[in-house]
Image 1 (cartoon, rainbow, N blue to C red):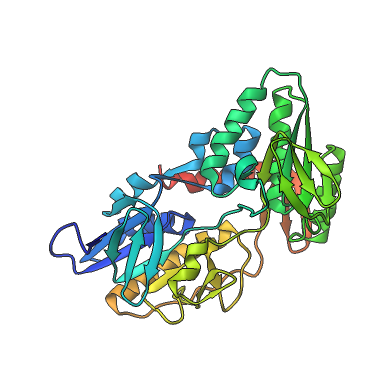
Image 2: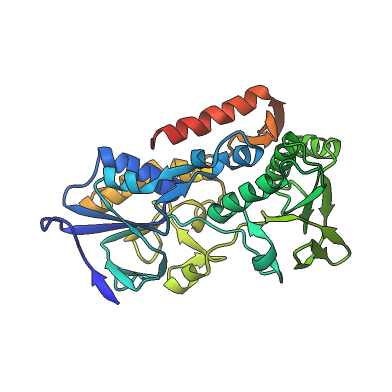
Length: 376
């Protein structure tokens, strides 16, 4: 184990560490490139030199985007912002000593720290690790999905895909998976399994419409089910065994366990943050995106909030380094949910209304591709 305090020019006086390359941090780096704080060394720590943009995931699964379209070049982005990327995984943070420790044993001292490490969808159901794949983190899933599709292409054998989790993400992925395999002339049966009710987080109008779409496309919905185990050939519940050739975990978000050991205040494993995006007892530590619990107004785990937190994060981190006034983050009360329907059509959910059509898919595609162009 060794300590890194600073590896750049000797005039730097403070060190800013960004842990994770989530959406908020990617936008932070984009802004830091234009407006940094002089005398600050920037270090970014993430296990991967490229980070995924999850907004384009359903389009990738459906075959509308290539795997390369999903990724932001974190190495290039960090370099352009004048920082250093450490491709390693943070395993421990000591907010009292202001240090972070990585899996390789590297210990870095910081003056300001920001967390944007996201969430995961891995389940502790027996057999999940061996026979299923979680949609988050995205890296493993993207590779395994492409291999699965390639293996089935040209085959006339029917396949079964099981999605665990009936939220918006699970429904989008079910429709996308069915579309992709059918486009490859592969007979497929898709099943969504949820321990509660499918599509609980959208309006009644959108829920009703999407359930009709699922029924029309013969996608089976299994609700109120308790998972017992997962095998190489199926998903076992308390009542039935569902055959599966590809099992995908898209159930509720899970925080990374190592965050609980940091000593930072948390709720349900998510790091507590105040209106300034700082943690309550440790103002030098910020947290944004899905890994954070916004105490003033608890938020859904949605990328739109991370994107909107980015400019506030940039302002407040800069203000902390300069010892100037900060500004609060005011989340929007509702936001437009654009839900892909497999092909190039989408449903839009807001204010209790549901709209649908090809135009909304093109709107979603425009928003996603415009976001990605910032980092090209």
